[in-house]
Length: 108
Picture 1 (cartoon, rainbow, N blue to C red):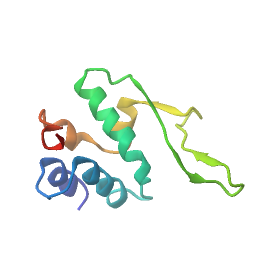
Picture 2: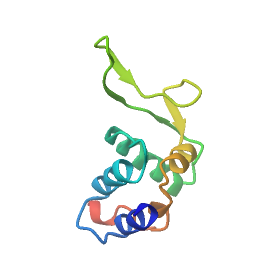
Picture 3: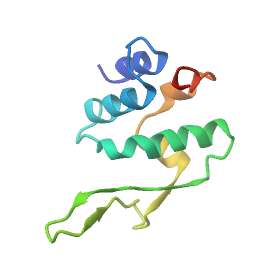
Picture 4: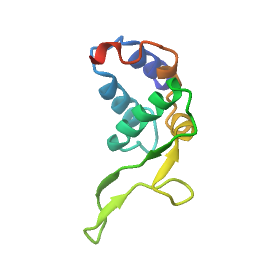
């Protein structure tokens, strides 16, 4: 599965939106699964790649609440609430989505 599935999702082989394909990739091809709320930051990182701005900081989302009922902020390794686009691309293995210059063509 893994990279083959990601390549197929990125190529449009499955009848799903780009966002849904990324969610499937994050949830199915990683252990532990990457939370679905990371799909939008991943899409922003892909945008940054195509805009030649891989050092752009991408705001990380909150994912539910912690045990005290406070919003759970996803944080980068250094404790910040943002991560560079290149790091998200690398961490989430988004390379299959970088091969297609028509990334958003089917989203309009």
